Amino acid sequence: MPTSLRARRRGILKKSVRPVDVAKVRGLGDLLEQFQGASIQARNLGRCLAVWENALTDPKRPTILLGLAGPLIAAGLRKVIRDLIDWGLVDVVVSTGAVLYQDIYQTIGGRHWVGSPTANDVKLRDLYLDRIYDTYVDELKFEDTDRAIGRMTDEFPARPASSREYLGFLGSRFPDPESILATAARRGVPVFSPALIDSSIGIGLTLHYQANRKRKERFLLDAVRDNFELVQILTHSPRTAVVYIGGGTPKNWINDGIVMANYAFGREGEGHFYALQITTDVPHWGGLSGSTLDEAQSWGKISRTATRAMAHVEASIGLPLLVGALWDRRSIWRSRPRLAFDWTGDEVEIRQVRP
Image (tube, rainbow, N blue to C red; front, side, top):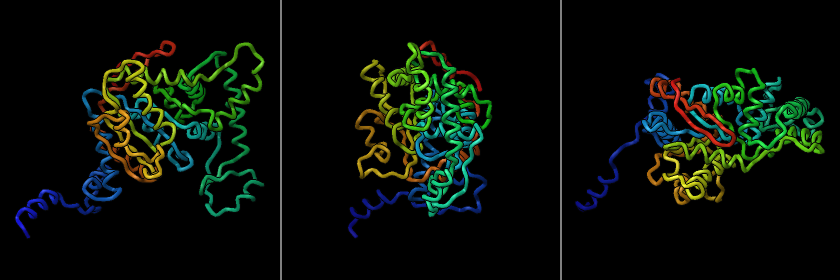
């Protein structure tokens, strides 16, 4: 073999794959750290942990935005998401309406039942049971939830409001300590849902609209104000990080926020400096849920120098592993200051507070 070829090979073959040694694993933190030396999606998931920890320990104190999409509550991840908020591992939540609706559904007594992906769906319909792959939910309890949302909305001030204001209001009405919305309201974490009506919360809002549509003044969901409020947060953040569970509207909306902040509101800075995503979608269909974080760099949504990782892992597996590993290594982030958001109308001031 020519000397030049040997040198080129040595330049590539610098680091060997390290076998995972489960006998030496003392917790999920150790496991995911070992994943970083493995291959395929194990390595990618291990890299996601490293990116999240880098964001949590950055002395510039990035604002971490969490995007949520997919059947996460049905998958059993309600408490995992609630704990992320309670522990201060994220600062802002952007979710599909469906995730938040099923949080409310469980708050008022609804449950997710073990089912089968091969069930007879026509028979389930006769029983008023809805199927989410291998999980059942109660259609009758869904109706109760829709009506409860409509009644609670009757108590909201008769004026335009952002989804952040409205969801904060709903969260304040729930004493459930396991609720995502209630925990966010208690902790002062803003929760946005830019496509809120594309969910069963939208049904509850329609019931409210039906009962109040002839009134001169009534509650209106102001989606454009959502944009402005998100940009306020991004503009006041010296650096941002994003954690995407799934993709969809939350991912697109958070990424577009950087574009709005930069050219429409004069924000001088980079795209998101840290970015990680777990998804089951793939990039070659051209859709946003599977589009790579590298692709987002071409739009200026992700910084040119961003630390980033993307794992193609289903959320019911990937998210508990990541969050469990972070909890296992909590000494790294426990002293990180929290953010307090002081809103005056649609404008915000952000300050750091000790946990």
